[in-house]
Length: 107
Image (cartoon, rainbow, N blue to C red):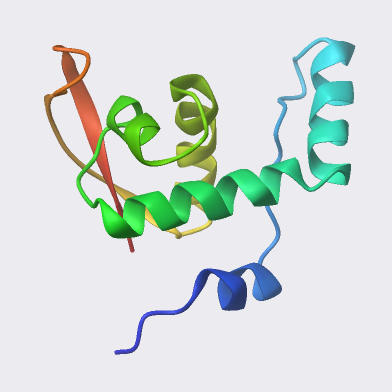
């Protein structure tokens, strides 16, 4: 089975919501700006590319391979998992953080 490219996938799928109904109004405003400016999609593409080249990485380890910080990556990975772009792997001791963390891979 041929792996779908990121661009092909994005052409067919919508991103999951960035805020919960119980979040304060500021969260909705930030989520709207993030979506309207294309930042969300840019982050997805950056993370997808880094993870494709470095499967089995933790969110903190991915910071070595892309321009995003750990918090940006950690926020996007579950969204990308809900879109079936990436999947959780086993947890292990992170090489950078020294603590147990989830690993991630491209589906």
